[in-house]
Image (cartoon, rainbow, N blue to C red; front, side, top):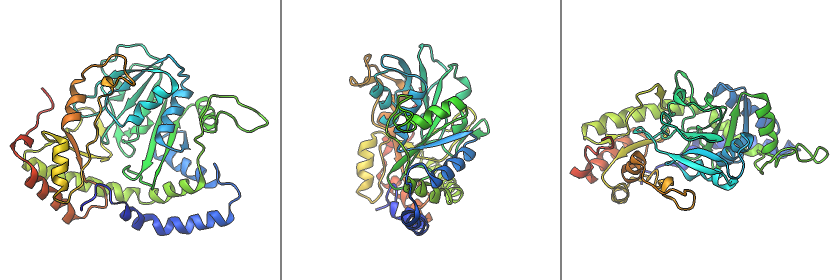
Length: 364
């Protein structure tokens, strides 16, 4: 089976270094929260993302939650959100008690931001598949950037996560900087926001003597998890080069088969190559058929949030969201794929596809 993410190969890359470092950590460290390795990784991430500050959190979801808290979002407030993504992009809004105002994605799969008319306390802008939304078109004073999937991508020549009052990163097996399990980070440039974020990830207080000064949650980072991120960062350039190589090969070969590949944005976003999406007639059926031939694909994503009675009080269709929900299938494109496996993926797509899977239109 060609796995969507072959995590054992991640271990082959980082395992030896990680276990050497973590053994030293457990033998010598007195503090396993927010210490040497956390600070080292935060400085590396801030530099990579052209930010003044970076703060590790226990997940990207916790990062979004902290951004909302730092932005002053309270129960009953309105927050502009995407209608299509991983549920983690919108659930923190619901958890706080705020109300999401959903907007469609564009034909490239990232959140549409050129037609925002609703007033809201904040806007959570989500880029998917490796691209950013058209950030310069946003007219809002509090932009919270869900850049979990566009770390290592650029917008207008700058790191995509450098945009927004705050932005978040996510680390797990399928991200550009993969780790085992999950972790996250919040990025910003403002000194006051930085102080708030640092306290909010620790339940809103610095220590028992000072007392609670902010709303907060339990998302304080751990040294051993920071070590995982550190080890993966050492391989990031090589992994990114391989992701691009695979992306270019898949694009060329699938175009020959008249398979619709997720289009490249017509604004200045350069992808991080986070996921490779194609459009087929019925993505669940296609996923099941190709798995029988030894290729694991994923149905990213499966929900139109604007239709969910749990988080939307105005259920409705979203044109591009509904197209992506029905047709967008992500195929293996991790940096650990061999050339032979890439060729097999193409061969199996060719074997499984029928005429209804060719030239699937998502625009018009």
